[in-house]
Length: 286
Image (cartoon, rainbow, N blue to C red; front, side):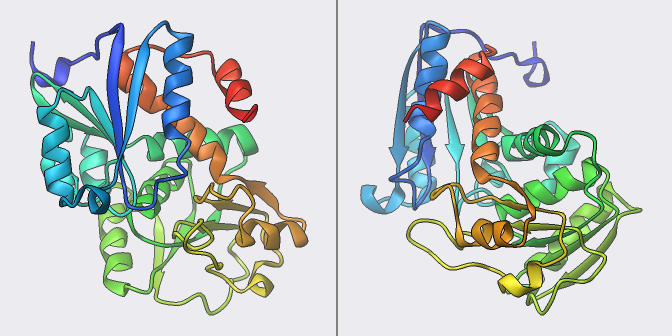
């Protein structure tokens, strides 16, 4: 059996963790503990914040690997930094260059991206078979990369990639073009206005998150869009989503991405499926 044949094993106990900087209010521990309870598996899920541990990201990652964690979730700002530390068996993931889920196996650390699969599930749950058409994505970091590849997979006609770091937007455009050569891609540094052809708007930046605040787009530019998605889910109603509501635009909440990426990560970690309706209901009980 080789690494490409790896199937996660069901275990009576799972030791998991999340590495990130702004994760004190994360609901990830609760999601995985509930998923574990629904499967008869005891779950320990630790929040691993490098600054509080006085360690670098690499040190935290290596400690988790050495201390028998079954796997990790990875979030802002480490989704791209973790890529050299893991094996990516899927060529699409290699092109994506971002990882949010790591499995520690006998064959080494394997990388997955459940933001990518989770976004597609969240989009389909909200909009069914409606095509994304033309979409503006603000932010080209780890979340933006996963969402951009997800939208391309869903049949987007064109993507407008906006990032203050123009090099990041251009790098994402090049990586997308390798996998989706027919996709029309435009890059830019600022949201000057919404092109009339753009029907979908995505916030893939931390703006609006607890501890960051703000919104990545002048609300006036949102008028005329059909749908918006905000990758931020703490708080549930960000200024970006509030502005969209004021224009009567269809909303896909960041909570939906959180939910589906968690469901998919749980399947990787445990080898088990989970009753999504029961997991959702229990999570929403607070």
